[in-house]
Image (tube, rainbow, N blue to C red; front, top):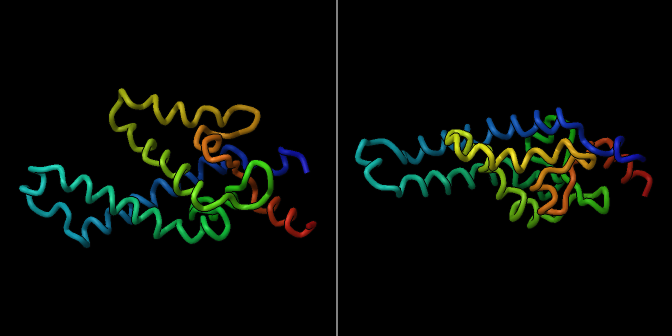
Length: 159
């Protein structure tokens, strides 16, 4: 199989990222409401609530994606779009510690766009997707690539 048959297309990756960028913050908002993190005006007089929201965001990410990443290298968005994370040297899921400990560190970069001077950070991460290997900086840092699930299944059947 050629790289072109294995690698996920840029539009699928974008769709999966967009789905994850809606689902994870959506669950975070629900958890913020359930735990009443920001209920009263005096809640905004200190910065503790930002840390609490951060913890709830990480919890949301793990609730929605932890099992899928560990089992098949897929977030919910990737599952919806038929793609998965794989090691660069094999068509098998990358170790969970790389997926959560390295790749996930880049996810918050998508949200810094609300502060214009920082918009360059997610762009620096995402622009390499237009290179030949279709790998963002977070892919390179974690030693992963995004592949079509059909290619992984086909590879598993031949071995």
